[in-house]
Length: 118
Image (cartoon, rainbow, N blue to C red; front, side, top):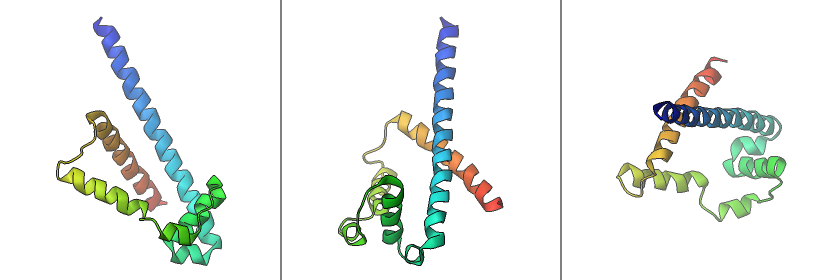
């Protein structure tokens, strides 16, 4: 029985680590895609909304103009508000989600160091 519990635990942890590696690989892909847009579009270099609009169109076949994007708050503002609530102990994530976020943040730190050293 104890061995089964340990096997289940390690399987769950391995799955979480694999999911985190997938997220890091996605982050690397996003970096490459953003660089491709920035290298050919001065407008994207000067405007987040232009960059996002071009990114969505080119890589996700979603057409939102800069004007349409200007009508909604930025995703960063929305998630920043959620983080501020959670910093105050309000509307907190489930413990499993917190653990996943922590692991992801650690992976992003590693990725960031890799990027800065290249």
